[in-house]
Image (cartoon, rainbow, N blue to C red; front, side, top):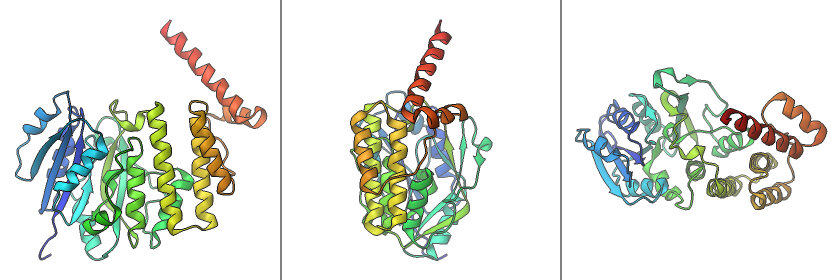
Length: 324
């Protein structure tokens, strides 16, 4: 391929000392030769920067900022990027060596599209990752169709799955720096609606690490709930801006209803706001999934709120017993 396009691999890092080397090396080992790897350390205090400085490569750029959040770090990295394609990679995730090559080759033949790839979840070693095919893992000629599937059935495509042409990233705009939890869900919703379609490349694999104590996705304090609600509200509005069909509205309503089941009783104001959105969208038939057949069966008899409260009380009792 003549005039091979440059790919920018952008990595935000905060207190990622235990995982950052593996992530960066997976970026540097990409078989696609024209690449730059830009890491923005977000004010780490655990020696992350020392690990990064020990990695020697002409393709690697290191930058540091005061702790400001992952979205700010990604925007900082993007402002430095010169690539024709953008690959985001979290500091605890990994991409297969041929991941970018396969997706660039696909997108060069499909201008105006973005690409996704298959991903596997792992806890200890990436070679133990489990790849389980999901409905989002296919081509979409209508970008809104992907968002409907993601929202209706609670699937995800984590940041490393994607490869985005620079022109589409520019059109989508920067990451929303108000968000912490699910900032990627809102960002890639904008990417999707700015594209002509999605090209899925099955062999373009990425590896999603679970069980990381520093992961934002594990946070469920007030700030995390508020970020998730705002991200959900924004991203679903992105969908409805291009597809206001009954199917799209039903998918969005189900997404808000699922949030109600998850968030209650911790954040009553957010629950009320989500319930209002469900009503505005025409209602939802989504049944609660509270964890276990027994609890779900009880919910059908005594109501899901009482069933969930009983489950929470039982969980606290078990925790107390374990401590004693």
